[in-house]
Image (cartoon, rainbow, N blue to C red; front, top):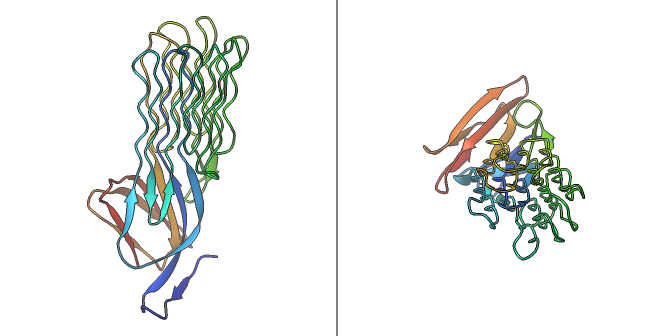
Length: 279
């Protein structure tokens, strides 16, 4: 339970907070491209002492723009000593299907071959991307709750893995869904994972969906000759008792609300040199 505890050594207060830290989602691959994996999802209760602490919101990974290339891995989000890993990029087909890239949740593999989705690493932040199996669509990116789905034998793209809900921002919101894998020329792209994933593209000119901003969603994969989409940026939410407050360095974009018990901070942008201080 949240509370305030005095530190006998320093005289500073140790302030208990609930946190949610989501990294940037991965970008989808291009050419039977796999969906991008969701950014890492970390949530727990910890205690912090006074003094400036690191605060960074990870950017989404770039969707692949060159045929036969993987999407970019998302950037990490950081709150004090807690780091969420960026989602893995989706892969593509080359001489054969290429494995998805690892990340907080792994990216999906390229379609029309046999390959595996990217691993979720470090463990405990998400799930693996979906694979491909022979003449199938591309794999979906992994999400915070579920792994990406393997591409369908009909060449339909695998679904992105669903994300997970949190109420630490003051209301229940689902975050960190994986991107759908691309489908074939005449079939559907994979559905987006709940929580900000992007739908997979399919057919000439069918564009994939981007990962949702500030949800850490992975973007959908590109089939061929279409515009790529980027993974969604990350997000940090902090909940503390009303007796406590947080202040931020000048580069931070954040909003706050209160209810009868808690103070909620929602942080949507922060760079590598930004900080948070609690009191």
